[in-house]
Length: 571
Figure 1 (tube, helix red, strand yellow):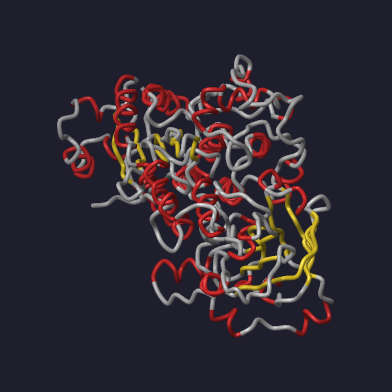
Figure 2 (figure 1 turned 45 degrees about the horizontal axis):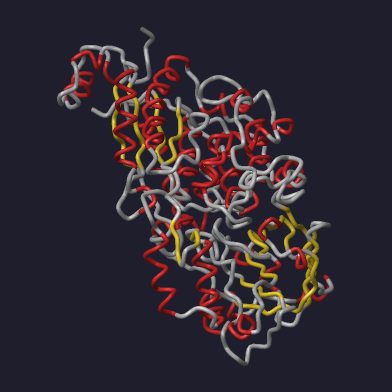
């Protein structure tokens, strides 16, 4: 048998090998240390990450597959991030989770790893970690929850919250009815059932080649998820024998395929910062402009919330990811492979669409050109993004007067003030919400509209922010403005009353203020006071080292990889 990485722990008869073996002999077969591949199951299960709470069960299926293929499975709990629970934002700890997972994968006697994630930041963090260690790795996503219903109609988690809460503020839905919807929204285990960030990253992990083809989007309670997890356990042992590593799977062609898929499925804008960060760990050349150049003209084929009507259970029933991507196969690179060793496009051949209302054909798309649009101009010199598929078409070209908020606290204190000087043509500007400024780049950019405008029937306005929005959110929202206000970006200089021009077709975002005047402006005291100012711990490290959104918001010293080698013994 070949000598695997774990042999440098277990092989031999010296004192250190004795220690490594003896403490692991807890009921496993004696030949477990005689050259079998040892497989970690990097498990983000946590009762405080409700979307991932079922992953222990998934891990058991992975274990059975690993044993069956001749490997030794080992559960490795890793840092878990519950998007709905942690404050100030799960994004603050994506890089910490990636760093901690990376170090544990490197430090332990393992030859391969199965990455169990689901909730928004867990799959990106695990992929970043695996890319930096570069041992054979494969993703199993926990899958979306089943469809809930409220008042007889499907209720999309996340998207339903944004819509219903605005109806309460508009006076068209009672507070009591809103409270009743709470128990209807979350019907089962699993992550959000809209095409939010969790569903998007599950799909893109498969397109990157890092999941068993056909597994993305299988609902969490579906028995086929456990079957796929079992098969993945067998597959990872094969990958170790064949030395099939992340760097051999996730190539530039894989990332460009992911950008095509992102547009076709109407995926989350958050995928932009995650894909850039994962590519940065691999040394793959990927830029913000690639999302526009490659994805801009890709049609939207999947009719799911927030860009459409259906939910992930509908998507799976209709044929799923592979069926959707078969329609744009000509736009995908045939060179990109998957964890199986075969080209990704080979798995599209027999993928049929079973419900053309959910998955549209190439000749009848939901929208002709639906990719993420990258905007530039004097308000976003290094770029900003918008999701046209989730925006109001009439607002994609708009000029309006800025109404500026210096922090999320300032926004919440004033947005419903009857005296606020705002109308439907105004442009809401929220700053201090970027990676450094918040810290962590929270999902606050889809600002609730002023109550008085909601009451008048307004349901969308142009909004601009250096933060993010939930992948379940919608609206004409300009996101990820870079550089952010806290990093010296022009967003810090905007004043209420300035005019801003948004022109998505021409990819521009312009503050209509002369350069000579901007050169004289300085951020207000209120703006500066709104920036984060941690003095210790992870937040201090994060603020000092986080990069801007246009390159993935990783920490500067984490970009790249250190490989799997460990040169010194522990005793």
